[in-house]
Amino acid sequence: MARKMLVDGELHSSAGEETHYDFDLFVIGAGSGGVRAARFSANNGAKVAICELPFHPISSEVVGGVGGTCVIRGCVPKKILVYGASFGPELEDARNFGWQLNEKIDFNWKKLLQKKTDEIVRLNGIYKRLLSNAGVKLYEGEGKISGPNEVEVTQLDGTKLHYSARHILIATGSRAQRPPIPGKELAITSDEALSLDELPKRVVVLGGGYIAVEFASIWCGMGATVDLFFRKELPLRGFDDEMRAAVARNLEGRGILLHPRTTLKELIKVEDGIKVLTDHGEELEADVVLFATGRAPNTKRLNLEAVGVEVDKTGAVKVDEYSRTNIPSIWALGDATNRMNLTPVALMEATCFAKTVFGGEPTKPDYNYVPCAVFCIPPLSVVGLSEEQAIEQAKGDVLVFTSTFNPMKNTISGRQEKTIMKLVVDAETDKVLGASMCGADAAEIMQGIAVALKCGATKAQFDSTVGIHPSAAEEFVTMRSVSRRIAAGSKPKTNL
Ligand code: NDP
Image (cartoon, rainbow, N blue to C red; front, side):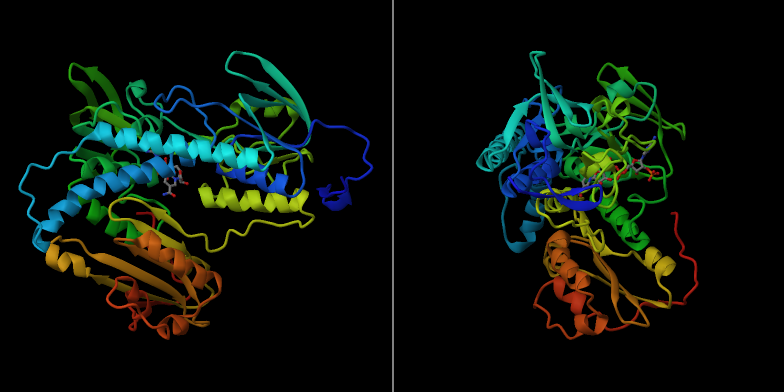
């Protein structure tokens, strides 16, 4: 087959090359990025194989599963639990809308868990079908690289299979990390948190990132007592400080006990749970302790050192702008490269990979204006620059527009929880540099705002857009007065 490929930075035709390979592409890891890369490469005419461990839907001992972290033990099951946890407070809010909830409202954790597992199994099947429909050969086993064009797959029964491939793609994702705290084996990570046999009554969460605030919200919404410990003044380091403060207020308002500037010193097994000692000398007991202290690239077992693939000190595979490693036939994408660890970013990198290597169209992923959301309750969603980043990066003055308001639903329900929205604008060009929102449906609203920012929208264009009334989203086009103007050269008040 005559096919254009990117080889040594140049496009060459592969027609007439003599070396025979079992496959044009062998992908290790069938998560979001790996499956997308495999399918799109196959659609471009490549002969593709992919390997992934089979998964057991309710055991967290065997990792793996076609669909990867996002589908099996990440975004999807987490969002199902967020939906589940949201109903409790919603039912309370419903009372002032005239609903009489006469009977005791009970929450059945096992039922939700089963529904969640059924959905994951269904999605796992869909992902497998997507691969076979694209003509991709799936090997169920653990892959490792045995040479620049060689892959070894170890199946669960120990059988080893060997294949050659013109290109190898590392798409092995990341794994949750546990800090070296005495008694750390008593804690769980998000992997186990998604499949607990019993709903815990007392939970301690360590960490202030995405996973920490999301699970704190989930358990709190389901009625548990939640203590959240994090090292900084506010959770969600790296996000806009004003938004971080809003999230902290909302978490507290929902009943989560925040412990800023505090970490855990030791975990001790006691009769009815885990005793938790903090570095401030506090002691408390919990049924479950969750470590949500970051994830590391899943690259240790790939044999990269022996093959000469360069990794950084976190284990992330080093790649160029096209996702190619220092070994020309080996590529990597997604969390394994630790660039921007989000499923849709891995999908973008995979699309670019398939275009570059098998589509005759070298394409670099574009990391500008990537929106994201933290699914705490209520959620936070952002796109573009935070106020602090804008102050640091903009050449001229920065204009900040904010709107903090009581959403209409809360005026009736009586819930004391403000929604906050923010636009950060370049004073000279009028270009909107960043948008943030903390409040109901933030992720749904921000996706549309992201399109506008990607198109280079100005504040004047936001202002000339007609609002949808009555909605919270219309605030984004009605923020008329500047909340503050920050002079060029100012330093952001950050590192909270
Ligand atoms: P994050 O990197 O977001 O946050 C890690 C948190 O753990 C930080 O608050 C950090 O504190 C803290 N921490 C790290 N080491 C220690 C330690 N030794 N002791 C105490 N605290 C510690 O990691 P997550 O695990 O929350 O999530 C991993 C990644 O998964 C995210 O970065 C994100 O890319 C992705 N993800 C995305 C989601 C989404 O899109 N909604 C949802 C979930 C995950 P400090 O700030 O002080 O360093």
